[in-house]
Image (cartoon, rainbow, N blue to C red; front, side, top):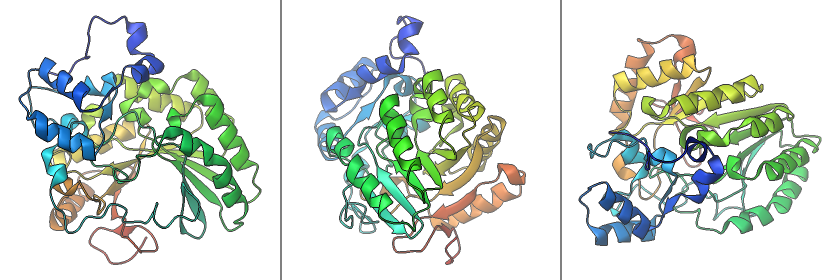
Length: 344
């Protein structure tokens, strides 16, 4: 059953995000040792090949949510490498949105006229096996930090940009003073009206959202945060408290679920997730179809299944609890509603 990696740890360690970060598990040797300690049967050679292609990292907190007795545990599926990541996928591409190959400035993604995405770090508390950037986040952390000045100069030079999205990696893994400085410099640009942060920290490392971070974020307005809960079991007391701390600091929090085969592609799971999010004051905003990215085809839900799930959910929950089912189509002018050819 789910439980901490080491239940004998002092609570002060387990709830310290820096301890969690220092004790992260990464690389195939550390992962193999963890799997052996949990009595798992696996092929070391295959595991090594997968992790050599797609890196592995997870903090003890999220690993502690896994039910190791269940090979199809929804937390495990998002976290532990799978041999299917190496399957040939004719529909997949390493960089479908040309975030790296099409960037004029490293770390700057300018797909839409009025908004820009900045990749401000390559660090993650967990490498999600379904990540849209699983092929493009191998750069060292310090290079992403060095790119901040160039990215800010780019935003300043484009007066049509009114909204900036901070992404990564995970922006909330930046030290608080570094993120504070970055936000201050962004809001000092006259035409920047809104900043959004995209982060899975509330899900995978909720103790990072402490009073110091929340207090700093409170000083920057208008600031929004989008996160990604994919299964009700991720809404632990720690995660709920982290979301509450953000909302109480005046930061609206929205959720962008990724529709994942075997994780949340059933009505009862998606309904429970949306209802619990609403109770936590987190808006169920989007349900995304998996991106056409190499290495994640085993997660992709068939379009007709997604459309049916959307309709079932629409008739079983209220409007404020109902997310929009969308996909991000390369070359499209905006998000596309599942079952529609029109950008939204």
